[in-house]
Length: 386
Image (cartoon, rainbow, N blue to C red; front, side, top):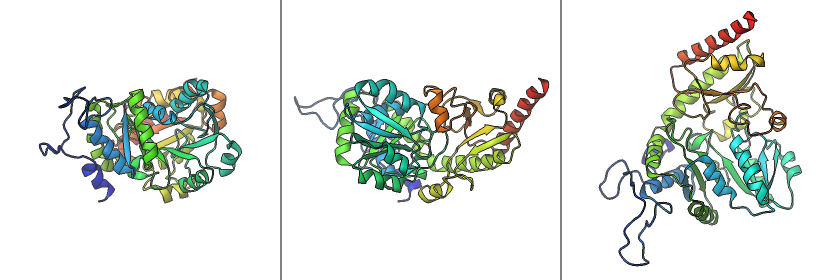
């Protein structure tokens, strides 16, 4: 079965009781037990819910895992995954990870004894330099957030296995439609289901998936013990969103490729980050390990002092956090999604104060390009007026 078909028919795609082609929303907290101490498949909805199970089976199948886990947010999924480690353990982290991931490690896990080192994870030499006797995992994003760095997953996994490390990959930007890290050898894959998987900016969710039975058992324990599970209503919405992932991702990346080329040729733009551009340093790796280049573009203006005027002048493209919805969203990471990372760390990793991140939606490309053009003109008028 091809992946685009699995998106629709994978996992538990219909109600086994009635044959309904949409799994029902089991809006219940608990389940009748016929005999004392002998619960059925479900006993309490924190531990398991039929609607959530259908979604979890689907994400596991899409990623090539043995088990999937749905959480109330992407950070809840990351929290449960990081709970696998003990005080004194050390992780190696990409240097431009999502700001919420950094905050969770720095403010929540570090005080309990978990340590980490942030490096440019594209370079195996930097991974080697960061390695300690206590290192237990390699945590990667590819494409990374927000600089669209591309990590060679096969090489990274080989290196991690040589050092007996767990490889964790945040696959939010690519989605399983474009990239399957478990198939490439990773141990755990994470997603913010809020983004492309949901696709409509109407829910908050997260996923963890693994192809390792032992890790699956441990993640299941932490999912149930910590309790940050996804509710049945959002589970149903998310499964519905995934059914259209293929057609949406094709539209996202088609528009993104056009806008990336447009921005790269614009006199007001200093630099564009998009792996689909031939001059992107990760272009060849992305072409090899991904089925497409995705819908995320980042760029810097020639005059970074005009960043606020530029993003505030947009009319079709919405100034807002998040990404992956059908509508185009734009943000400034240093002020918004990555503000929790100290400025010196942001700048060291290449996240400038004026960096702009654009989640390209599925609107008509002419409208998107026209909107960007009028925003450039507005920002230039501001400059001329001064």
